[in-house]
Image (cartoon, rainbow, N blue to C red; front, top):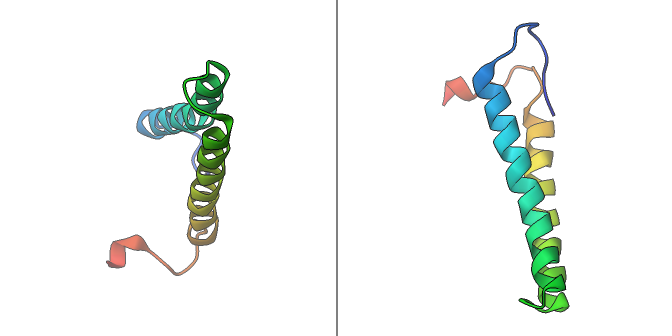
Length: 77
């Protein structure tokens, strides 16, 4: 979820999105590659993929709920 409020490009934000994309793709891709190469069993691959889905959907849900521009601000903490 990207909030494009300004028209200028932010290099740090784009780098963070790029690295996050690499981590997420690796988290789903590496278990499949390892299972196909018989490094791990397919059952272990399924468990890792299920865990990844739960973790990443939880993180995404957090940012969807708290990422809106309402009265809440993390700077209050």
